[in-house]
Image (cartoon, rainbow, N blue to C red; front, side, top):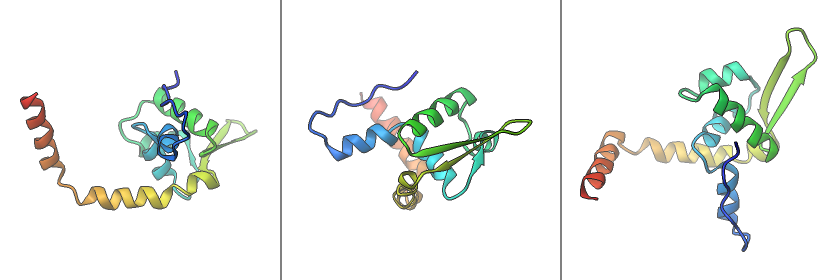
Length: 121
């Protein structure tokens, strides 16, 4: 099941970018892949908390959007490796900056703010 994209009649670049990587797992998968090739099982270990079904769906979606490349090898047993395309690699500096930004946030304090907002609503 693919997710519903944001309608973008005015071709806004932010909406376009969000339609490509704007879900829970895509940026994490892209960041984990980085400059290396990983097999499905390795990705499943590195992307902690994702189900195999969702990982499969996300990889297919990222492949369709030409962010991730899937390379299969005619071996026994079959081997498949995932890596970033050049388009996907362009996202790495942006995601690295998000990591820097995120490391400056006290997660416990942010959780308290979320709880306070829920209580006030």
